[in-house]
Figure 1 (cartoon, rainbow, N blue to C red):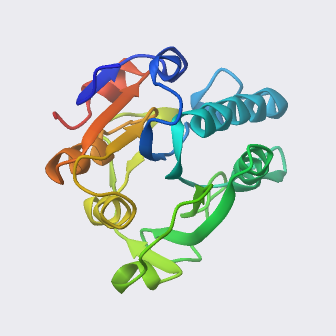
Figure 2 (figure 1 turned 90 degrees about the vertical axis):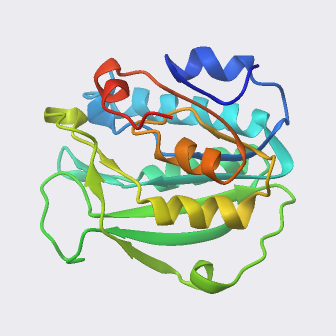
Figure 3 (figure 1 turned 180 degrees about the vertical axis):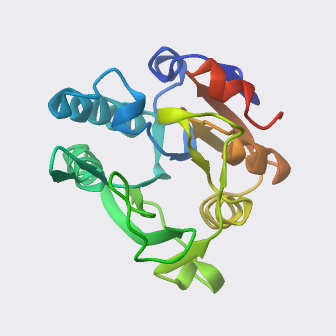
Length: 217
């Protein structure tokens, strides 16, 4: 697989081309259920999430890290606990939850929203990886101002991670020359930061509208 690419395409077409145990960091946020074909079928969406986690576990090195930062969701009068789905899938792949943080997006914390929470569960999984903790990484709760991706409307009106958050994760969990993979890249911010930090990068985005509004890398 050729690296240092940001591709327009389906993650499930790209991931099979990545070799087993070849990547140091997978850093991603899967599309919200409303952004998929499974909007009315939670079970199918959770199968989609689990399939992605199985691929992540195949691709990542034993001492590498999988970082998933995503909100849970309010749907059909109940909570869709995305972070629990990821945890269970990774445990089934014999990975451990090495670290966990709450990422608050645009204060106040108690902002009311009918559909989404304004904080993300950031789960860091590995088999044998070790983390040199220090500085900002020691915090359990991180608060950032975030921006929307372009002028996209409707379900694709997504927020992009702040640059400083990407720098923190990539700096703590990789070194120069390591491979950083984001198969659901959206704005491409993680790939852009990885490039600027002298890491190899690879990512893709399925939505042409999102891709066209992404960062030019």
